[in-house]
Length: 474
Ligand SMILES: Cc1ncc(COP(=O)(O)O)c(C=O)c1O
Image (tube, rainbow, N blue to C red; front, side, top):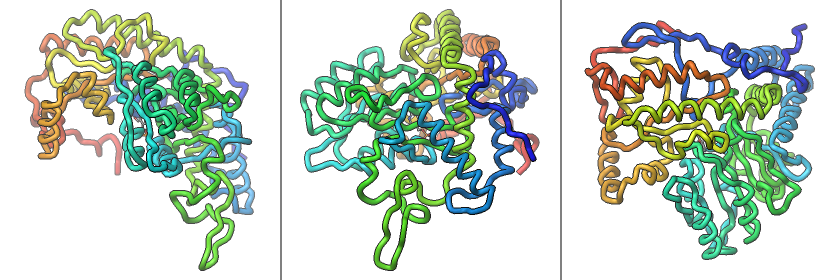
C-alpha cells in the first residue's frame, strides 16, 4: 500500500522553504547569452506547482477511478476524496454548504459563463460591472443583457462615487453587480464589504471575480451576513499553484435549483425517458459529464499548503516583494508604473506591477527580458482592453485606428504594458536580476536585431530559433 502524502490540516510549512519546494525551481533555459536559470514573474496568468502537490496528485493517481456511481473500492475512495475536497474548498472561502453550492468548472471564465446562464433579466434589468474587469467578467454579461460600467478614478481604482451614482440612477433595475476582487493589471484590491453592502441595499446580488484575489488574500463569503455576503464567487486553481484544470463557482443553491443547467448530459439527471429528463440534485446537476477529479483533489491539497504556510506569512512575503520591486524600479527614471507606486501601500494591493520602460514597445521589453534574461513576464493588455486603454489614456481616435489595424491583422501598434507578478516562492534575488535587466533596457544595452511579427505583435531575435524538442519530447 502507498502511504498517504502529507499536507493535512495540522501541518506547518515555512514560507522560506517554498522556493526549494517549487517544481522546476532550478530549470535552466536557453538565452542569447547562454543557459540561465528561469525566473517566473507571470504568476497572475498562471502559477507553477510545488513538488508536494505533484506528489499528492501522483499518490492519488494510484487510487484514481471515476466518482459517484462506481462500486469498487477505488471509486468509493475517489468519490470520498472528491467530496471531501468540496468541503475543504467551501471552508476555505467561508461558504456554507447548507445554503450554498460549490460547483466545479474548468476555470473562472467557465464559472462566470455558467452564472450568466442563471441570471434572468426582465425587460429593463441590467448588469452593473466596472471598467476594471477582465474580459471574462465582461463578455458573458453582454450575452445576458445591457451592461453598465462603473468608471475609474484618475489613479485607476474603481470610482466608489460613480458606483453609488449608478446605483442611484438604475436602482432596482440592477440585478447583479459583477466586480473583480482584485485587478489583474494593477493589483488593486476592491473594497468588497463596501460593494456588497451597497449592492444589497438596492436589492441586487453581487458576484466577486476572485480569480486574482482568492490565491493571495483570505476571502470570506459571509453567507450569514445579509449585508456583506458575497452571493457568488469564482476562482481558478491554476492561479493558485494547482494547475490541473479546475475552476470553482460558489453561489446560493436557490439560484441553481430551478430551471435547466446550461450543459446537459451524463450525471445531471435522475431519470431519462424518451420524452423527459428529470434533473438530479445540486451540485451534480451543474457538473455534467465526468468531472476533473484530479484537479479538484489538487485544489484541496494546495488549500492545505496555503493553510500550512498561513495567510499572515503569505501576505507579508508578497507585500515585501512588491514593495522591494517598487522601491528599486523608482530608481530607474524611464520606468512608468501604472497604478499605485507607493511601497508603503504594499499590504493593500496584490504583487502585480504593470509598467513600461521609456518608449520601448512593451512587447520588445518582454522579449528582451525573456531572450536575454530568462525572465518570464507577460505583455499587452492582459484580457482587460478597456482598463488598459484607460490607464494608458488612449483616446477615442487612437482607439478607433487601433481597432482598424487589429481587424487588419496588424497588432504591431497595440498599446500595453509589461506585467510582472510575484508568487509565494519568488525571492528578492530574482527581483534583483529583473532590475538589472530593466536597467540594461533603460540604458539601451540590449540585443539590437529583432524581428517583429506584425500579426502577433511579438518580437523575436533575428535568425534565432528555439528548439523545444531538446527540452521536452513530444
Ligand atoms: C481578474 C480575472 N478574472 C478572470 C480571469 C479568467 O481566469 P481563467 O483564465 O482561469 O478563466 C482572469 C485570468 O487572468 C483574471 O485575471
